[in-house]
Picture: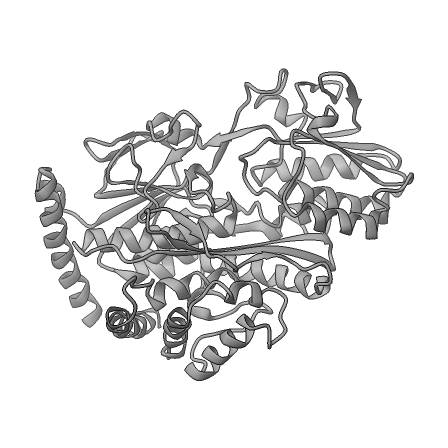
Length: 103
Length: 433
């Protein structure tokens, strides 16, 4: 189980690395690095043990839209609008690909 | 079995990478040949995560976690035990999941010395272990020289309860034994200290306990600061629930400017002494000034501040190479000394350790901090921030991100998410996927 997840995240991380290289001059953190910061509230690999939603395997477009809507305060939240404002479009793409790519 | 082959491959690749790195530094090649061993000292919010995330990223690296206690007690949510909302079992955790699910070698022992030149760790049981890289996550120790009459021995009469476990149970037992109409006096520490909102959450949950069980009791806060974390949110909550600001307030907050700094303690009589007054308590809780955990001092990892300077990209000590320091002990400002920050630092450190041991460039780090506090069981407040790695090689706050629960925020939902935070961060540390 862990091994499969590792492989999935490794593939995602590799593809994101390419995105990063072709992106901005200041290459940002990888999807795995950004995604792992979410685990304190959303669980390891986005598998939640509590009221916070699980993120693992959600559709990439849904994850992106949710983060953009939190960021613009279009979608109400307790804390996610404060968190989402910390991320660029490229960061959001990388995190969405990381969680969305997990099987 | 393909797993085995992969592990062997990574081991060889890792050794080759390490050999290149070591060669450049002019270090002996011996360690690299037998390499791939990381020792983590301290199994708290930082150490458990560093151990697990190194193993998840590269199962070819052997990880040994040295922790003195067989049972872990979480400081976050220990205030719910002190306030009588949960039993001590709620904050107890064991290391079985890290061993069985992630192959972390758990050693229950106390580290007595670190030889940075030989890259060895010695323990009280007499064993010596070699490492390629060492992660030190020792938490805090107390500056017992700052309050006259207050030392480790006195802390078993007048608890600090700022390291969870028996101290938590002791303070809870004292509050339970206190008569209705008694006075709880709490002395809060100067900056920097572990968990900046923690003392004020404790005050809140003790007030909640008094309100429901001992309503004639009072709380006196002797603060060695003039302002504190989430102050507006806490005082708004105290006003709403505990009559703060009225003549009948359960809580009296004495700031530093108003002679709040405790200079001495009479532990036998439970008296806290400031410059101009004495405060007689029925239950006295003294949280002293703090410094990095003991082993960091023994190993010479601290600077004049008493905390550990580190490179912010890797958390490698700027004093001793191949030793990384994470969590409360490290100097990682603007990250606070919080459990969530330790978790986030541990992941950055784990990724850096794996990159370095595989001879790769270290990737760009990223951090988050999210701290919840309970004002009542159903009234939660939070502070959050997103951090990035700045052009000058430091941790920086991402502009426009983070901040406090708004004044009109949904405190009931935040209390639910506080519980969820605890479930998930414990799962991240001790089991999880």
